Length: 101
Image (cartoon, rainbow, N blue to C red):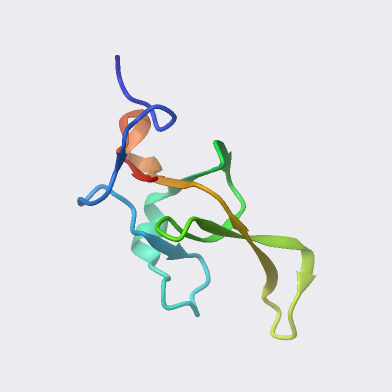
């Protein structure tokens, strides 16, 4: 039986493991364009999410856009949701190693 991102055992390090924290905003110190181009899959509370702006696996949270509201600099307002987070590289296919708790 092959492990899919839904059933794979969580990993903690390696070249094919996403970082502990990553953001899509270029102004963030956690932004990495090379990793984002590979595609990152995020599972938050056992639901695959496509609207995550930033995540942190070790602290157990994701940031998602709060509706269509924008701040005064034109960036979307975000809210922080707490819970278990898992991440994987989508370019590795269904057998991708999963980072998370």
